Length: 249
Image (cartoon, rainbow, N blue to C red; front, side, top):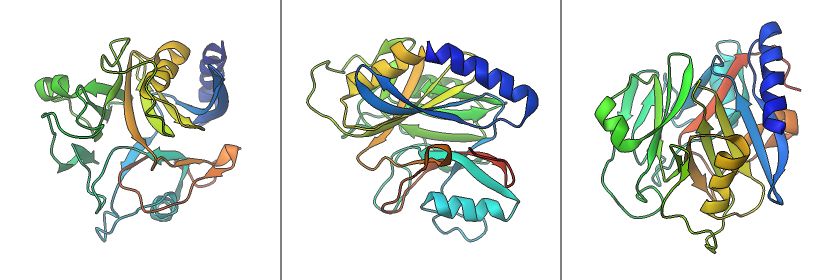
């Protein structure tokens, strides 16, 4: 299975070099996806505004420009949570320990309010997807966090409201996590419904927890695959940070 080969390859790479994302194009149930596996020790961060000016970063180029000041760059990135028209996060958003937007636990309109939703949390050298009510109860110390929804996989089961034959199909992206803190970021090449998208995490990757980031507005930066999606300004983004001289091929 590709997952086994990839994990083995990542482990071998981590012994010799700084962790980078391993992004590959995959066919799952006849549909194309980009799947980026990131080790628990990797330097994953969330980005929204320039911390010095407070202005919206808005794009992968904006993040790269910000990182360049510290001799760093992006190895991989994608949009990471729903946002309002002015790019403010819809739900919880924490960046470098600072809570910028509060947790939302109520049901609401749209995909975000299709409960249960969840929180993508980065802490203690690990990535986690945590269902929102569990997050509210446990209040883990996340250095970075972004709330989105719906959950795709909850304790190994698909979201109970997903329909296998739903005709709601969009290009979608999301994240799944393993028990040992690794993360899989998945981007669909073609429109898919929630049930099919969730099966990529549950069946192909074996992720017990997975969270939907967005659809239609989904954007991916994967230089090893020649991907640098452009478009209108983005809100929250997740990216893997490496030294500026790290090769990305």
